[in-house]
Image 1: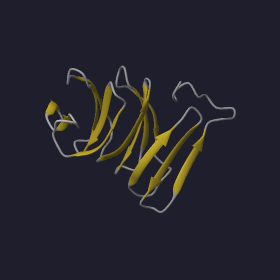
Image 2: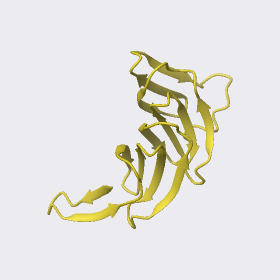
Image 3: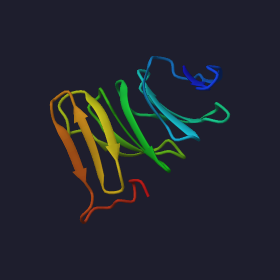
Image 4: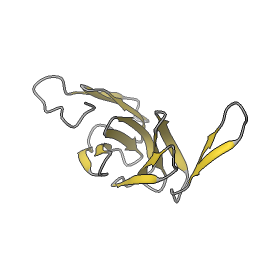
Length: 139
């Protein structure tokens, strides 16, 4: 479960219940929370209401990292894949399977690149800046 706390009073404001196994990562932008867990899912939450709006399914291992911007999410995990998701529908738009040879610990992106780090000791930079379709990346 995710808990939102008032940092001034220490009061628990809201609980976000929905993952069936341990939480591994989340990102919060003031309105939306995106979380990944050992249940192999990504959940998109309305931070004001606590409602789970979308569940993204497709990873086959722990979802270790999520990064989101507007209507795109990039995730990675222990299945060694990096995935790009449509945050409004939960549809997997891209699935990169061959970049790392071990667990992926972190991922981030902008409108031109996806950058990931892995237990394999490598940092992977996928650069979409030239001659590639960037419509699936943060707009």
